[in-house]
Image (cartoon, rainbow, N blue to C red):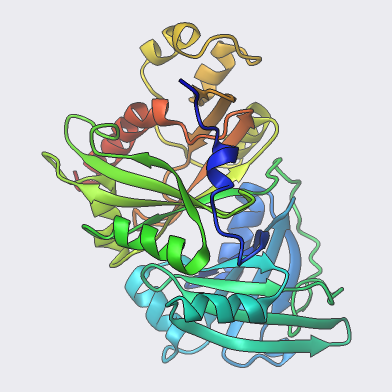
Length: 376
């Protein structure tokens, strides 16, 4: 019996919307300047660009940070009566925009809206002395937005309206390279609807599915489907809660985010031991490690790997294997006071899956955190 590879599954995606990868991720936050300091200090992001009153933008301030191919934008409103203020009031700090790098932002908008997408931003061309960027946008789950960014005729630091952000304080990078995937949480009975939206509107394909029999603990469960575009550069797993004895992590997220949204951002590294060691030294908090038996059974469960198990154990790094190789991963605690957004650090050594063998250990760690907050 032959096994279909992830590459073969991805090839089934429609290709009417070519995507080159993630252009940037924009967070709406209560204090962008302080958030920028945190991401520089804790995660090693570097100053890239800025827009605000000094650049002629009167209603908001935005700080752009970069590390490897990852660009994050931290934006705050400058007045209480503003859509960004409303967003932060309801959801807390969180991801508003998942921007995709495309060849043609006008065509992307036309193709997705005629397939049923709701418009967020009509196509427009922004220009400055460095050229032009064409942009458009649509809504996806909740209030989250996919922005289409076409920048082939632009040489500036980020986008027109931004100026280079020079800063003497730039802690060294931590080895983060690119966005591997971004996970969204949707409400009860909304996963299949969202999956169909990605298939119909974006031409994505479902490359992996997990039900509540696979992702569960004694107390809670969830269901998940992974959506990918045709070249595999954009992957969006979609989670929904499932019935359990107690409240699942997805239910907790939906309650405190007060709606659907981005649950976590997975960022890749080529040396997870070095990256996680550095992140911990800078104060980034990770979920509690699995029990020792997890590592005792690792040789039998995973087989031969390059890394020393004792070093993985010391940092609490999880390992899983699929038909194409193995991966190493670890998850931070929520990066804000609300138990919502967190990060995953991942290193792939051939594996194209998402760590199904680690789900039980991960969920038990999440439940311990939920219990400490009184939310289990």
